[in-house]
Image (cartoon, rainbow, N blue to C red; front, side, top):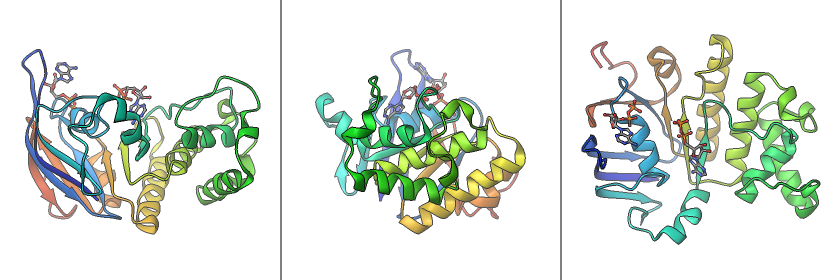
Length: 237
Ligand code: ADP
Ligand code: ADP
């Protein structure tokens, strides 16, 4: 469960990117975050994974405030948050299985054969995730041999391998064709429901969001201007 209370962010430049955002995301709930460029979507995501330090307010993950944690504890906070990226952020020279296990490790290893570091149960768990995202037949392929849709499936499995309490998803379909985009959004929403994972998906394709997510939050000028069902969304946001 994620709770955000009166979150504010003013950059050093004076740009007020977030202005009193309050939001609760329940287990299994997928929030589609929409809004025009400059609305504050990226800043909100970055405050939650603490790439950016908020100026005001509180972020609670599983009831624990993560807003004020010391820098040395940030890696531990980030391990609790699964990230899925627009450009997948895979390591091209590693296999699908290695990419997924690097999610469990929390960093990208540079030595070869790092798979040996993992107990069989971790490899079995990674295989189960890859099976769930439809890549059981591709575990030993290098990432650079995959299609865009397959890469994003690896990205999803890698995020899940760290057993996160929250998924943050940044424009997951921006590099994919429409049909693949639908499959990826459907997969993310199904998996969150199955695992009771809360998620925030930053998505500029409003129609795609409306079709798959359970709730839409619209930002404008750093404020929440819509929070409700996909059906209730007018075209003004
Ligand atoms: P979105 O993701 O919705 O496009 P952003 O969070 O990127 O919105 O931006 C919100 C506001 O904050 C904009 O006015 C933008 O110019 C400003 N902003 C974003 N990042 C920075 C930064 N690193 N330094 C200063 N201003 C920033
Ligand atoms: P942009 O959307 O402008 O490309 P990102 O939001 O992807 O920027 O973040 C910048 C970098 O920070 C990315 O390369 C990503 O790998 C890294 N990053 C973001 N969130 C996390 C996280 N929770 N843990 C580790 N690295 C992260």
